[in-house]
Structure formats: C-alpha cells, structure tokens
Image: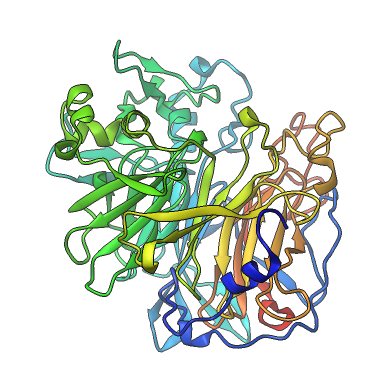
Length: 530
C-alpha cells in the first residue's frame, strides 16, 4: 500500500457504534466481526465474459431493450443502482432505480457516421428515450431476484421528460428542463428518493462560451441540439426522483458540473450534507450544507481546498471575488467550475464516486486518473472532517489507497460498503486504453474488475479481485440488498470499442454472434465469501 500503513488502513475499516450508512436501508448494527475463510482472488482476464471468484454466481436481472411494462423498455448503458424497499419490514420487495448514462448510436439509433448533421430527428428521439433512468418493481422469489413485469410502479424517466428546477429563478428563461441525461452515479435521500447525477452533459447539448454566447461542442458530440435547441445550462444538475411516483426536480443549489454522485449524510438536527465530485481532470470536490432540516435548496455550497484542508464558501454574498465576476448566485451555480477555480479550489484527478465509511464517518473519494499529471492508475482519497463533524469547514485529506502493482487495481471508480463493513471497488480503465501494448501501464490489469477490501481476517486491508468484466465493459453502480446477500451491479458498455458492427469485440450477455447489451446483474453469495 502507498502512503498509508496497513495498521492505519485497518483502523479506518474498524467498527464504531456511531456509524451510519450512506445507504439508509442498511443499518450500522449489522456491522459484525468477520473472519475470512472462502475469499479467493482471481487473475485479471481479457476474456469476453463476466467471471466470478469461487462462491459467487450471477443472473442477468434485466438488459437493454427488454420490456418491463407495456410500451416501456429498459434503457442503454445502465450505471448507478439504488434499491428502495416498499415496506421496510420486507427487504425482499422494492423498487430498483437504474441510471442510463449515454448511448452508442451504432446500437441504439443505427447512426453510423461521424457527421451528426445527418442524424435524423427520429434517431435523436431513439437516443433520448435510452438515457435517464428506469424504475423497476423487483422481488425475491425462491432466493432469486426478478423484475415484476407490468407493475404499476414500473416507469421510465427519459431525455424528454419535463423536469422542473427547484430554484426561485428561471434557468435560461425557463422553470423546467426537457429531460435528464448523462446520468452517472447518485445517492439516496433519508426519505427514500433518488439523487441521479448528470455528468458529461456537454456531449448532448454542448456547453456555453460565456464571452461570446456561442455553443461549444464536445469532442464526443451527439448532435441533439440540431433537433432540439435546448440550453446547455439545463443540464449538469443533481436530479431528485421519487421512485414511487416518478416525479422529479433538478436541484440548482447543488451546483452545475459533471456530477458523478451525490452522497448524503443526515446530521443529528436533520440538516443535510451532500458530497459530490466533478468527474473531469483537474476538477473539484464539493459539499453542500443545508441550513434547514431536510432541505436540498436552502444552504451553502462549498468547494474543497485539499492542500489547506478547508471548505470554501461559494456563496455570492460572502465572496467579493464572485461579486466582481458573476451576476448573482444563480450565475455562480450555473458556472460552478469557474467560480470554484477563482476561489482557489484544488484540482483533483477526476473525483468520481464518494462513500462515507460506516465505521468512523471518514469520506472516501475515488480519484480515477489524470494523464495530465502522469497519474494513470488513480487513487482513493480519504477526507477526515474536523472532530468527525460532517458540517465542519476544516478537514484533513490524505492518500488512502493508490492504484498500482502493490494494490493490484487501477482507475477506481465506484465504491460501496457492504453490511459487514467491507469496501467494494469497481475499476474504470477506458476501453480505448485497455489491453494495448502501447499503453503498458494498463496491461497488467487487463479488463475492468470488481474488488473487495476485507475489514477482517487474513486478507484484511488488501484489495482482492473477485470479478472480471466482459470486453470493453466496466462494472458500475454496486448496491447491496438490505440483507447483504445480493450485490446489484451494472455491466456497462460491453463491446464499446468494437471496430464495426461486423467485428464486434463482445457478444455479452447473449453470446454467439449477438450484439452486446448493457445489463444489470444480481450477484449471489457475497455474504458467504466475506
């Protein structure tokens, strides 16, 4: 391990009676001593399969294009997953929320070219349907999870769903936006709604040059603006969705950037703290502290200076530099990256998923990589708030785990703690970089993988590879069922870097010559191997 002793690492994974989970449906009282006897690491693999360590098995719960209600189909590139029980007394029946981040036009709309001006409105609308999120009724029958087809709760949120802004002022002249998109990771509120985060929104509608007013296009341009001239400012927000009703709202107070996640900590007085990272190289870590119990609109947004260990207020009225450069608080929140930079925020190596240690309240931040500073393998940063108080404005940041040969992983992305306090990590090596001789720093790791860092036993503190993803895929959105016996996991973008439709690099999950399909799997046996 790098920059942290094994003893310190094990202390970090220790148990505290004051622990509380980011997942409100797993209780800290379930954190019990653990002794490893069955955990076996598997080697990295280049094979086009979902491979698991001994003791684990999986079933595909649902895959792209599969109908789960009349005229309702599962979207593309599933990412974040959240399970919300319909009745807390019955952990085997509930609603599964699944993000749909982006599309591969070749598969979704059959658009094959590079000139997006040739994409038809019908093709764009196919793509719009395949982003957003799915709400699925699921239950456990004879020990296996299944989707309850045609259930009244089943519904889709798409790129065309009208979603209001939770803000006193209109955004670019409107009080609502057309749809949600680029939905990456997320979080769950204490009251059981979902926070889904709009990450790389610029690939759909571009970004704004605020000096000229012109639209700036992404290098991965979907061209939707050619059919629907929606403002870029309507995207890049944290979106709250009620899984029971499908009602949604975009929370302007949490700021606009390439949000990876929104991880909530409820304070003793009912106020909320929301952590979120901006998943791009040299971007920043944010924290919102509400001023009223249960509010995601009233409070102060802060950005981290990790060198000084301080949270810097982004409140327009408190910062003279913001008053000189921005019109008002709304302008600050829309142009969040610029405001944070002017205030001295610390650039980070793609801050992605964030989880709060259930044992001691420390905050883990996955920093995936940053080629601009030579950090190809990424790391996990630990943020320890002053006196353990999540509304503190001072903290200590240190390297927690670094990717590399010692830890046997690279490019950490999503994080999750299971009910026993073990840490689970997914990796995100780009399909364009993996298994290439000219990218030697990624060769040892081969396909993306799933790791567990046991809290106890002979393997304590060691990242252990327990699953390998199919070709060009990554695992995302790990989420445990309330009893900890099942891990819901997304398999995203298998075969993404296929040379052509006639030369597919993956045929997962259907095999043969079938096209690859993103899917959600239920992995069984996780409570037995660790």
